[in-house]
Image 1: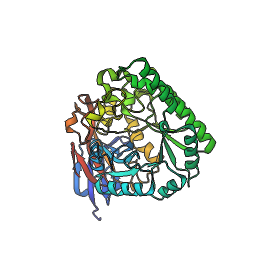
Image 2 (image 1 turned 120 degrees about the horizontal axis):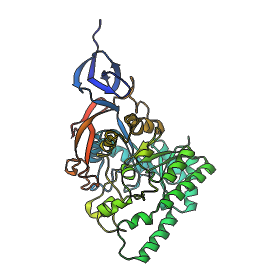
Image 3 (image 1 turned 90 degrees about the vertical axis):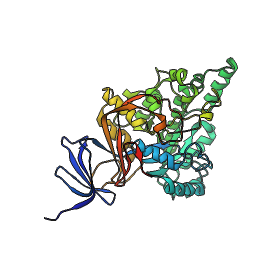
Image 4 (image 1 turned 90 degrees about the horizontal axis):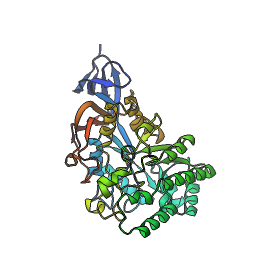
Length: 420
């Protein structure tokens, strides 16, 4: 009998869909064997019954590289991702310069390749049809449209152009309505010159998002677009997405907070779209088999976050807290553990066509996240790898966390230590 020796063997691993513990043999960055019998490896790690998930994939991060690296860069952002259990992230195009030209996209690919400790993809910004066609040769994850920045005529042109690109690529959408935001903001500022932080959520109202999603659906029916809705925050928009078979993301802050949190955290919790009123927002109980989690990890400097209701920067850093937050919900019996691999890995891998990722199967990439459902603690921003110095979740108690992240068969995080 020939003894097979693997590069790495994970011993006593618990898979969600297996009753017994298994051995996972890894060769050349791939899952080579999953066995109930013991395997031999050049390196062996005894997981002692901890659960192994397919590596987490985040379809929505802002790593700020290039141009705004004092907030975050691909090195610190990817280390934060690894610390949170992520093995793949997709970076958004609103950097300086914007990633909406062939040159800018190619330049960012080089930056990310040099800095990232995990796998990555890039979303592209919208531009002229000719420029977007050139970007397509570099395999963007999608083309991202910020609907709140464009007029109706400009939106129509974007939807038409993207639909006419080769293979009708995904059009990822930030759904808020520019005109409604402008009208609401004007009224609020005129009524009271000393607007509290919560007024930001009324300026960028739930109706702004709902109308924007309605408009996106109408345009997609006209031009045949392949839509994906980012950071969906209202039940109305969720029902629209589901009934029209459109993929969507939930963020941890929209799931777990309502806009009363502005009274506790002020502008630190400001984000776009903002937190919603309790009676219209999505919640943990809206997570289903078809959902995707996207953190919208968006760090800023503390100075930028504290410039008042209208001038503070929008964004919350969430890569290092989202998995333990949802594992805590599982421990509270408010969420089903079986949903975790679907919403963090399987669904996003399928949606964005990530071959060899999203599942624990022989022949697939050895991108794996190990979790301990019983490990408890308190979030401490000082132990995070992100450059952000704030989090509304700082000081929150959790139960359940990633203890190891394996990317391409290599351990990139072990017990809060990230290897770059």
